Length: 356
Image (cartoon, rainbow, N blue to C red; front, side, top):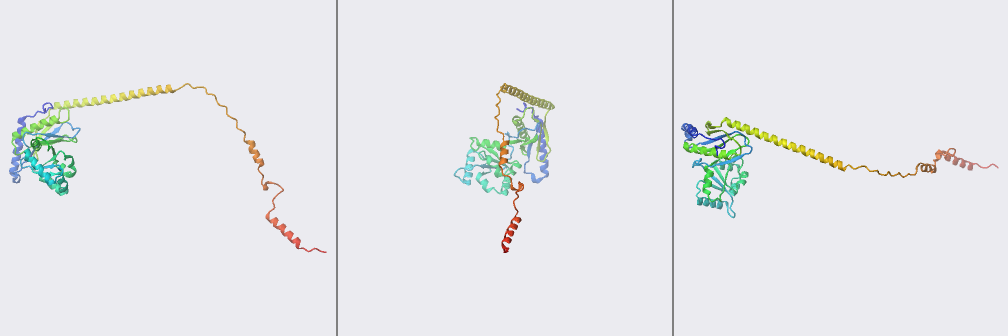
């Protein structure tokens, strides 16, 4: 599968890089006596030709376990009906023992996770106590809101397991001893853990070959995928084990040109279809307008009815209206002063005695 995608590893070169890395880690551990008993991770650094369009998580089964036996594993389970958290814990412990699972160090039901590990300090303590977290696939979607962002920032989010599987021991062993690669759509580099410093060079080399084959087969990209592959530890320099040929670059350029040409052709087709649609619609509209245009018919003009003249009526009304008294000449209305004077004269005349 990897040969079809243009990824062919040189086994001798891979083994030399692994031996050089292990020698560096041993020399460093002798200097630092505090880290004599600790093992360091060995990881693969993939550099892709293109930034993927979508994010992807690839599960990688490995032929040799890449975790030491001292790693602590925690399992989150669902709450069984009509059982307390302690009873569900005992139930799943018994189930794992019957199936032959021995790598789980602690079982935490969902109800206990919500109540006992609700404070921030309890979550941080839980994160530091275990190296790997597993979860029942029936409860996997409910965990992010209760665990918090620190589990995902340190890449310790729980991996889902089907606890109802008939081959439970094999499935859990594959998940624990396998690895996963998170391909991000924001960059072209990604890293996966494939071993530790206590493993032999042959075991690490076989894990590297298996990881490269699965990643090359499961990546959702077309054409050549891998540009560079390095091997490194947490504190060492990255050692190259694979470099792509320049011919892959020409293949990618041709593929990009073909994709661009296809896009242009699609755009031109859409534009042509739009233009044809507009022309057809215009023709149809014109035809409809022509059909709707009828020959004008002669319509008889109605003679207007003569309305009675209003002018003489207005004159009559004006003649009938009485003129104001002030407008008449000669017949002036006596004023109040003249009326008072006449009354006084009449009174005076009455008072004068007659002469005999």
